[in-house]
Figure 1 (cartoon, helix red, strand yellow):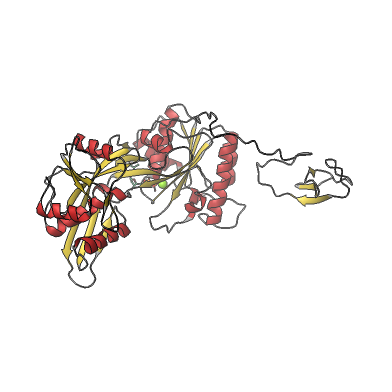
Figure 2 (figure 1 turned 180 degrees about the horizontal axis):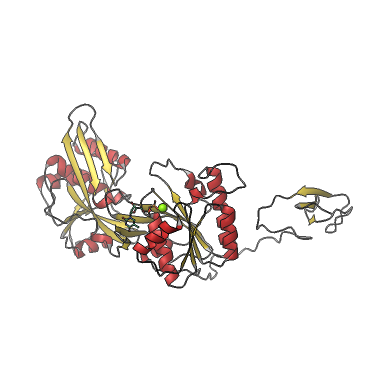
Length: 454
Ligand code: TYD
Ligand code: MG
């Protein structure tokens, strides 16, 4: 008899047998069966008698593919970022800073989904049941039929999930899960990888959607979740600046939807409130717009968003000039400063420069270059831009202002919010807004300096 886990594999045709024989029953070769101890992963197909590969079924690109079914959670901002709901059997990683609101968001997601009829479980490795329940009650989710558990042992979780039928399971967080098959401590890369691998396998096998929560700091000092990005179907980042109530859920990878979609929330006293129309949210509407402020007409995912760039150029008190930037890329700021110096003769090399994106939003579009440049120039020259003006355009190293995507949507949204003019790359037409087209950054600098908006 073969020992448990041992099989006899024909070295000629590869067929596996449970018993040794002198002749391979599959290919009739003699003396080719050799014992091999299979350490196959749980759930992998057992080698069956005479099993053979069956080749590939090639298909054309044009064939009809039915859209995957979706579990609609009812938290619309979350559903949209997922691509229209959660795909059954998929694995989603939700990463973000500790304290940004991941647990709050996902408790709301399962609460809402369970009210819509999905069987949902929320497994916390960080908080006791009473804590999670207390929070859910404060958030008005007391009556939602969510199954709660506090557990960190992967073996117990897998066993529990195999015995019950859930549609959607949240694991909060992947760093607290540990498998007794590995000696490394919880939160180590080995454990995170092993736990995520097992959970994703279970998701695929049982058709249950699994949402893994991962703590990731901006500096990437908690690197754990990065190692599992490639095994999950979607990676969503939950972002927000400390001190601001706004939270943005951003798709970083999505096998079932677009990746540039964002969901916007506001952290309130009773959980996260969805912001359905965020375009005016990040605008500082109170009071006059001072020198150093420029309103950027941006696009986040499928939606236009208007946001104020605020710059302050100040004399350096002593030593090296400071550059501080919140909500934008500091490398990009360095580039815009270099272009202003080299192509437009505006030297800020010996001055402190502060740049802030209002409201705590993070902007990564190249189209924001011109808005940042306009805010900097406006502050340096101490000339305010017109109140009713929006700005967008990409700035190249040569000092050109390049056209950007979806100019029409940007202009339309700005018009809707009461703006009358736009400082923009050439190529657009006067429509709802009066366009001040600029081809080079020097044109923009001149217009701001001379307050020439004809
Ligand atoms: P949490 O979801 O626990 O963060 P994470 O799971 O990402 O670590 O959110 C914690 C923060 O959210 C905490 O500072 C308190 C705040 N919060 C509110 O402001 N309002 C609320 O209704 C809740 C539940 C939390
Ligand atoms: Mg948490």
